[in-house]
Image 1 (spheres, chains in turn cyan, brown):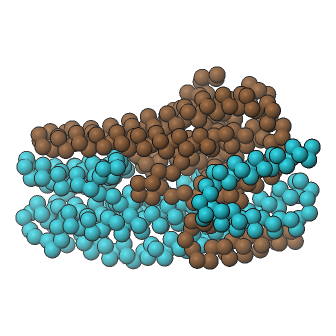
Image 2 (cartoon, one colour):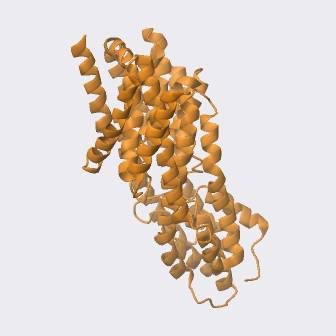
Image 3 (cartoon, helix red, strand yellow):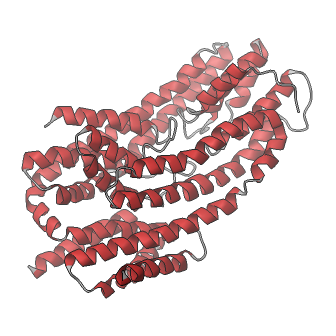
Length: 251
Length: 230
């Protein structure tokens, strides 16, 4: 472990700035300017003059990873920058490390947060919403932001203190496996939610309850059409237009 | 036009819109949160909750991965809520069918958001060039400023999307609502079902879980039969 030189104030500023990592997201180099902005307080403490310019130039190069796992990447980056500023050599250079780690972390973060946690939190909150409870947004925000902030805060701090060993640390969470579990739970919850909504609709319209099972082939057919390239938006508008036309014809 | 309500909606659109990509990402930009928040500020949180739930379900499976820009579901949810709560009293129409109709009108307009978002990201490319120039000249104080200017671009994109949805939606609904609200009200329970079913279909087609359809079918059938028995 390297000797810590960055003060708690600097680390707090880096952490707060990491919440704005994507403020200047662009097609050319994605989060690169954001990385320079987030690391700026630490770079100013570690380097002066020409070395500082070189450090900025290093971090303005192409960079893109998942914003919530960026904490770990940037924490390790700071640790490497610190080693470099002390004139010590490390077996992995800053640029080399970032290029190596950003894509796998982006894939892992996308699958876990966007593909796993967010739909799961939303599926749970939707039960509250369809019962008319205003707790729905609160439940959603709580469920989503607990893992979000854990990875942002702990990731940055552990990345900085553990250095390259933090890569093993994050591996302990088995995020790809967790993402699959979250997705499976989401599908199960959506199945139950759709069943509840179908049941309520049939009861309100006084239609035989058994017709509710027709929703299954409809969902499977819709999924097949979407896989064939039909957009969900087009499907919703077409089905709604069909329902309205049928109603018009039956009047 | 009720300018006060539209202005409140615009303010929420800008602040919450930043949460999509540029700042925090606490997910207050998700329809399930943004729409009830807008509704609450305009005096009817439940109308917002209904709209938010429908829009959330429809785009549950759309992921903001890499350089892909999904439709602006945040502004769709906020715009539909503002339209429902401003047009309802003016046209003396009942809330539930009007909320459904406003959502159906706002959803396609959300595609405009992708274009504005793309423009904002293109403009941000200029900030990067300026930041590089600042590094060359040793003017390090300019780098954070260039970065933070990106927030302005994203805020403008959100506002432009909101304005497009509300203004176009207002025009369309002013013409269509008196005729369509009746039929939409008559079949409202069926239309209400379309969103979760299509949203789930979209999610199942993209979720990349081997036995997704089996799990869905088992959960659906189990829950449905249980409700029937009870």
